[in-house]
Length: 365
Image (cartoon, rainbow, N blue to C red; front, side):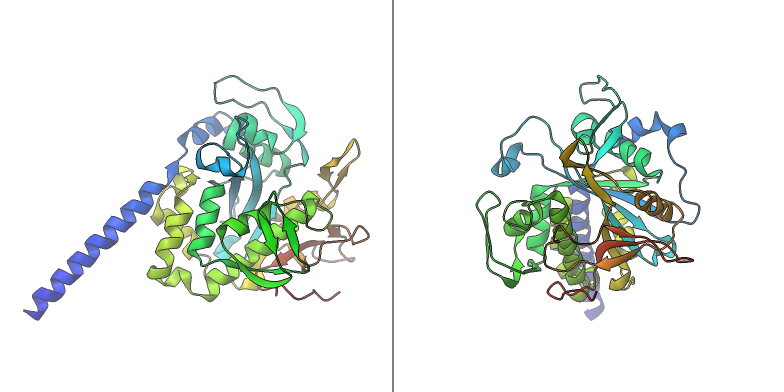
């Protein structure tokens, strides 16, 4: 009798797990159109890594249609608000997340619009690639810029980001001074505090009320926030606790579009599970070296040779060294985003942060 009861319990539990698993799988939208578009340009794309390293392009969009209208007027086209090239080293010994500024001036290739017409190749702000040709155009622009092959892509909108932060119970940030920003819906005191989804979204997107109001400062803040999010996920054992993991996955997949290689919970879990043993000091965040564009100070351009050396390191699966960002905004006289390597050194050092960095502690200089 006991054996029968146990068997019944196992079967019922398995049924629940299967149901929940199917629900999460059903949340994910498979973007097959991207793969079809990229196949047209296969000969011109960079070669995949020979070391086993993988590169995932993470795209956060500012689509303001539907429930996203709460964050501004719908202009009819979504743009990439945040783009991160996530480099997963061979053997999953490290993770390097490289932010690409939306205002960076780049050569955007000729791309296919949603209506089937084509754009002309032109020099433009990076985020116009997504507005003109969606994810496929963004991937082609990134590959043309970096000569790094993008293996997978994931796209999420405002709502998915908010839900994921809330499912984690909020994420800790450190405010060096109070911030009051009506546009971003922020009213934050100084010091350590936990931000829920709504305030977290305002925190990572706001440009007014923080430092010099530049996109550079905003990306620094995003990287510090993401490092804190990764640290909380690891410290609370979310990946190893189904009770904690399910609501996070449900939130993360609720507004997620993926390529066929990451379009199921099984595939996503395999990707994430391979990262859980990486030390927090080996999870690095940085932005491509950039400086004001000489023809428009509100735009950026790459700094050379730092950018070329960074892209080569990702391409060859070599370590990228970062120096931690402090909680204070960078003053105009601060060092550049990349420092040259010493003679015989392994490579330059880039401004950034790691997931083990204390968000309220100034880095040593």
